[in-house]
Length: 135
Ligand code: HEM
Ligand code: HEM
Image: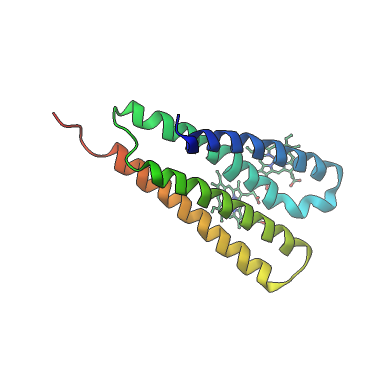
């Protein structure tokens, strides 16, 4: 198993743990409901998407009988997806509690990095799965 595949799976489980604790805190203290975006996206981009990236990188090329086309791009995607997610959620949380305009701008910038990481996964998967196998 590639290192970035393992890392995706391990960190996705970590995000599940953190977001579930935040979910219980939101249940206990409704003033924390302003962090709903942080909770939902820690789950949906952190837990769900990163688990899918990890399993997808490992399993989908094997289904098609071809190695992953750009493993280094997978490594870059791991870092872009995690830095993008943490930056987006950190600045969104800071924006929720104090209306400094730079927080929103930074949250959007890290969100754009997250979208870029999704683009890398999309490109790498299509480059791996689409070419026809040689006869
Ligand atoms: C112990 C685990 C969890 C707890 C205690 C929890 C708790 C909560 C709470 C209190 C809210 C706010 C609901 C409201 O608006 O009043 C919420 C929203 C949400 N949670 Fe969780 N959650 C947990 C796990 C998860 C998981 C595993 C996922 C996804 C895989 C998830 C996805 C969401 C989403 C998408 C929302 C936003 C829903 C909306 O806007 O209506 N949660 N959760
Ligand atoms: C870079 C990627 C993404 C960005 C920048 C993004 C951004 C947003 C924003 C700004 C909202 C509105 C939040 C609010 O009303 O306060 C939202 C809501 C939502 N998004 Fe995303 N999203 C992304 C990816 C995803 C993915 C991959 C999923 C599902 C797998 C998802 C599921 C949802 C859901 C269920 C809601 C409604 C719950 C909530 O209000 O938190 N999003 N998203």
